[in-house]
Image (tube, rainbow, N blue to C red; front, side):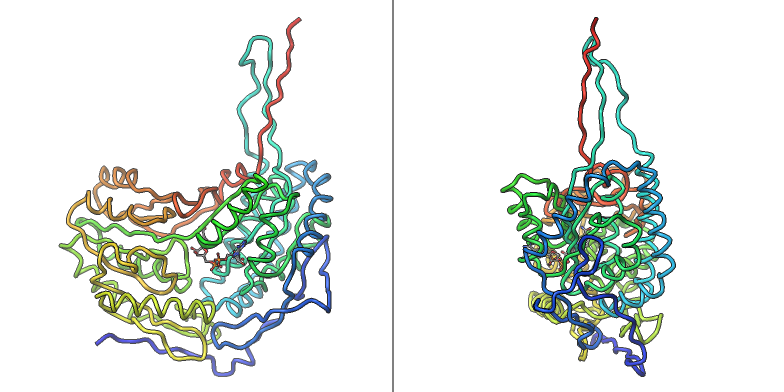
Length: 496
Ligand code: NAD
């Protein structure tokens, strides 16, 4: 008999509401209203209540924003790295000043536990600060003669106008991961937040908008097939960057291919956690309990797929289940100690619930959880599935909920082969005390990030991005600045 979590609810939800930002597109330095535009509801996933109505943008709104971004580019791209850095640092300060309000708004709209929202805001501040400094410090090869009497100079230029599409799981943070390096590199942009979670991006532009020249940063609200697709299609957009699902990535890349614009894709993940028989099992179980269920498992790098040596599988699983059983599940407004919130929407809740149903029908066992919880709101019991068959859907597909699967392996070659057999290539971790094995296995794993004896540890200095079905392009670090820049070779003939 598995134990199922209860949902903690706030005593008086009506007293815990948060101020709303302006509920409009932000184009050419101002919030623009159009009373005739259709709207879409923004839902609180903890109780299903409507928080607000926001405009459903159209291709025409994108076109207005792209025109503004194009006009702004002429002067923004000629500012110095220091001038841009001063603005990004000021923006970081503003975000920090509004940190509590931003975190509360994020928790309300996305159902995030307070610890996650607070971490998102702090990380966004650091992304702005890192990008400000990195934009001033990043370098190219030196000017030199590579052909006799011909001096080569490499100029780094912004790409131009960038279209950005971000998901609902980290609404503010994923926007910051794009906005800060894109601006630091001298580009202007038009960003579309997720239709489910537009509120913190609107608050962000409200609090930092006056720091930027009009048109440098624009936000258009709306759906993927309308606003997102127009960003991929627009002839005056030079690069389109999407963080989202594989299906959306394919749609954007296909559309962008028609105009040969550059594409930057951060897509899904299904991170394997490879635990060898010499691993520190207590540390591994604690790391999976954190990194597997962070943001209620709605995390592209989550430690979601454990592959553990058969000789230590029972001990590892017992340690993990003990911690998962103790999670506080609830509405984030019911206390800062809530660890697991709801799924972001009714459709996503149903998707995760159906995944669980099929996994159990396929022969997996719920060592804890395994079921949806009662409403209101979209809660799934924190779950550990054991006996998950290699190659089964639960082992291969991104569930994106508070669900960790456990599979066993017999030897190292099998562990590496099975870890690599997923279509994704975003992140993985390896758990062993043997140094040579940790490096050798890391090199054989086909993932953009491989952690050794840790999982989901990120820093702004190091790149984030995937291989295979997880897309291409890098967020964070100077690699992101590179992706949002282009290089020009100027060669001077100085023969006399
Ligand atoms: P999603 O693909 O449904 O939506 C992401 C964004 O793409 C939304 O703004 C959506 O409106 C837009 N979109 C949808 N169809 C589009 C189209 N045809 N053209 C243009 N835009 C379109 O993803 P989601 O459900 O919001 O987010 C979850 C997914 O994002 C997961 O797969 C997760 O792994 C991934 N993700 C990846 C990273 C990473 O860094 N690799 C980070 C966070 C989330």
